[in-house]
Length: 305
Image (cartoon, rainbow, N blue to C red; front, side):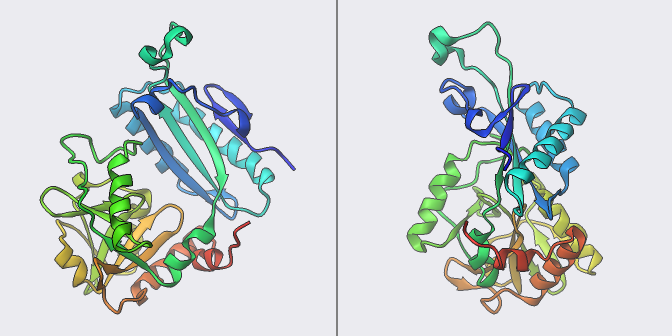
């Protein structure tokens, strides 16, 4: 069996050797951007979209990537091809990660003359079994006291690693329900997103999405918009409050690993029937046809080994 490999600063290395020094700025001050894509039946999905967003995030964060888009795509394809042999029969996720590199104040005598961007790409087998209950029973979303970062402070358009506020918020949400997922409000009480997924509601033939300046516009969210339109559903961006979620016919979390999971409760209030709804299933079926994998069945049949 092949040994898993990763990419680190210009070289392919075994996963065990893909490590960052303790004085890397991604560790010291959280100066890092990232993105994640996955395979379906061993084929990377939406690679261009994920790589493009990663490059835009790096540019916004003043991180000078040492690779072009074409070179990043080659790295992605090489890692996926190799690591599918390392984990035969598994779907894999691939992480792109860039930091501001060496933080010279903390590096001390280990400091070098350069402050080049750290560039990492690595894979792991997708733990699909983690989302079985989310698919079968749905998710309880809870709005914690912790609020979303305002886009005037840090743009919501980039995918970054400054998520301490979401770590805290999820801990607060789990004090209400150990299985809950934190759904973050902005300072005005509008719905934004969860720590790992976009959030939308559905009512009377229309999918409602929070305003895009207030959220990370996800690749999966764009697929929700596109597939919904193909199914004859309207797609509307507007401010949403807890009242709108509680009175929706359905609500969904959308993210790369599982595409859609139904939100069946918000702060203890049932959404719709309190179970994954028929429109959620239509969306999942349409997405499954597009990627060539029955996403629901794949998750339900997955095993934790």
